[in-house]
Length: 388
Image (cartoon, rainbow, N blue to C red; front, side):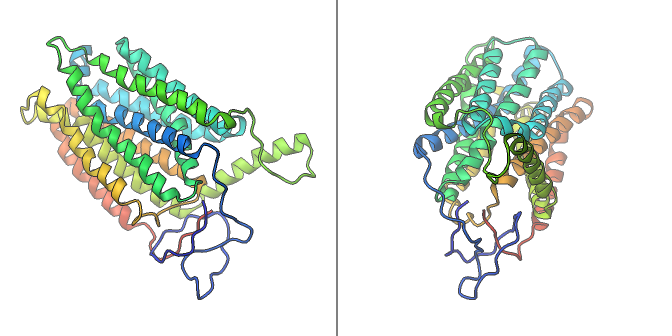
């Protein structure tokens, strides 16, 4: 990230190097000697649009599930216990991504990683449109989560490296919430259009977005479509030593990140926050239908209300909250761990609901939002921000 010198706010520290002591004239933002403003990447705006579109597609996918779960239950003749399998498979997708991310980065350049993520999501939506048997439908959630992890996480990391990153981060995150906002409307409209619901045809919508995303990635990141990108290390090393050094560097970075208390605390917050948000969005429709006797055709739009505030917040709060940034190496870890929380807690809710009924959603959400509040209070707020 670029270094800025004009902001004077309370901030978090997430750093991997020892900072240089600030002068009395510049007490807030810390510098490292030799770090300059990064040059503007080629095709910057198409690349940012690509990042925004990938987040929008992820939002459509995540935001629509709650509206579709009642139809999934009735179409496949399953209970909430089996719906939990979908969230469990999603968890393993994010977990696999977390474990494979450093290896992928050693062999594929950014454009290829983004293309891989986009392709996995396209494949999943093709299978879903076909209305496959439930086991294969569950597998598509592994493909989508893995694709999101490769596509969105690295798109997010790329955006952190551009000038005025906080504004563009606000844009792409708002695009995710816009997808969450649009998804329930499209899903409910398609699923309730006929008496014999064709809910699976909804997936033609994210499929089309995915194809467009794939094309834009290919065009805008054509300069990053390379295998085995190599990091800059001392020129005195030979080819074999260079490869070995690159691997050691990757593992050293991982160990450094995992040793940072601030990263774990921020990850814990997102673990509970996304767990609460995705649990609410995923089960609220079935809860309103079963417990509150709501009409399914009307209740399917409710998850959109959960996303409206998030959409506005990400648009309007980019400037006030840009102080809450971190070094790019830590972003992927925080992002993935948050998504894992968003997979575990909806699955737990479904398992419990299979025995006690969907009414368990209410106490689950109370507990999750309470944990979110406590984890927020644990975040360090008395030290300064270091930005690489």
